[in-house]
Image 1: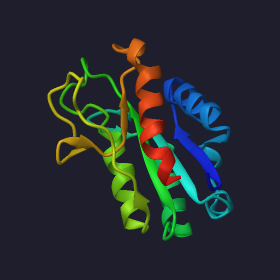
Image 2: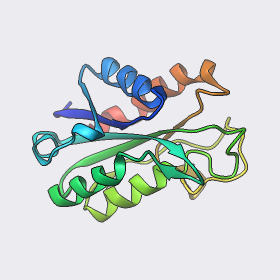
Image 3: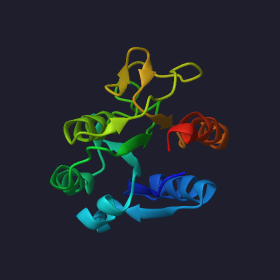
Length: 164
């Protein structure tokens, strides 16, 4: 596996905990997006970007500065995988919507964004993070489906590891 870092934006700690689990399983570092620098991006070949979802499907607040850092660094030649947290019951029409903003930022910065997971097994009405029947990354709902989080992370990591 090439040099990899997990970068997360978390307000309530849920996404931070998930980022920590992913980083631990991969044996890599997790970095809060508030601490993100161009150097961190340049030092890594693979970026796993995670955000919680707020309001009507927005990414976590610290990511607004974070996406500027991604754009400044440029992601050409970088592999990006996305993960997001949401509440499929309270926000069923924008479930994990914050991931879509990260997806656009990564694509616009020139990254190779890995395919996300199927919507099979999820209960929600709509999401800006679904393209062609799949999420743009790994969608997690620790509010209502915490019992599925570990298995979803493990399956996603098996899916993306060959590309890292």
